[in-house]
Image: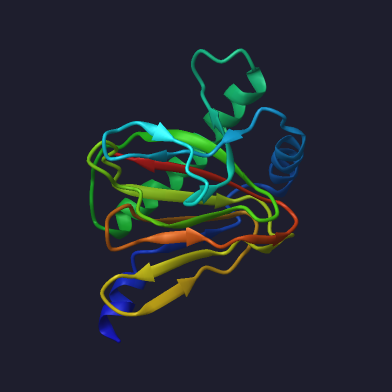
Length: 194
């Protein structure tokens, strides 16, 4: 169907975006990290709240300014570089020349039973335009990234493959979810642009 094809064309998948040795270091850091917080959702009034009936996951934000951990600063800068390269390529695909800023880099940890129900990333209080997920590992069951096309009754499951960056528009045409993790732990990094 033409609508499905057109929507699918705007979900870009970039494989092997990080050298293997760096990826292995990032995996170890994620597995050893102790400072994950409960994932929150942004409410219509702009507040953020834990709502486990919608999102059951943990996250850690990475900042390159005002952070005491030089390791976190390094990874915030390095992942900003990885996302920036992907987003520049994505904008070239769209034939757009525009400035952008990578926002709020977060490492996500999904343990057994963790999930995130269908949602979109753009909101009036959080006007995101481009969404990114970097899949760190693939040695888990479940935890699939799934898009639901709102115009037609179809879903698209993205293949699980570590070291893969997925980029798509943050708007209402791209509701997406992470299915419950059945076993293992799923690690990914998310970010957005305005």
